[in-house]
Length: 237
Image 1 (cartoon, one colour):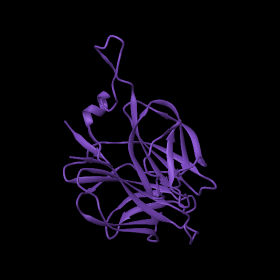
Image 2: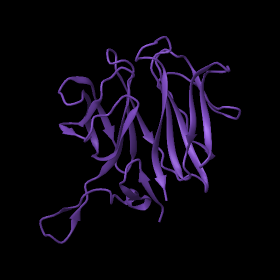
Image 3: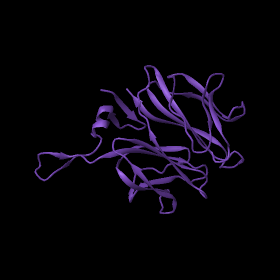
């Protein structure tokens, strides 16, 4: 059985995910069988450069224990399927940053990004792949969440270009790289050697699925300035 950790300590079996065993089970009236409600998994990411720490809600239910800072994420959580109202609030308050209806399907994993400035917030919902990397490898995808940086590439300094020409809210497939290897990742203006941001000394563990995203404004020099961040989505063991 293939098994993996999500970003936090929760442990899941891949086959269990597909069979719906990530759900809590509810007894039916005869007390002999169990009704397993369909669920999805969803991670919430604060990629708004000037957002205060935020709380993430699905309908009326708060999902996080600690508010999510800009550039940080919430581990995958179980969520009932169908149409759900996803909302980010300023942490510890009912001051709404962004809210919208999303649709979740059973046995699927999703990442929901809060992007752009808090004055003009955007959502990006992505259905995630959890295919296990080849032995000794890690995989990484790149997402461009900078609204004014133009098209961008993700490259390894002195090495391969991993993803090319991604405009705002576009993202690559997961690309295989060697695991347990220190990298310097460069996010560049598409088709050039002009570096928008550098992530130094990043080691992606073997058997992990990862995301690198660009956020912020290329023209800003304050808290809204451009930056990039890394999320470990899944760890297989």
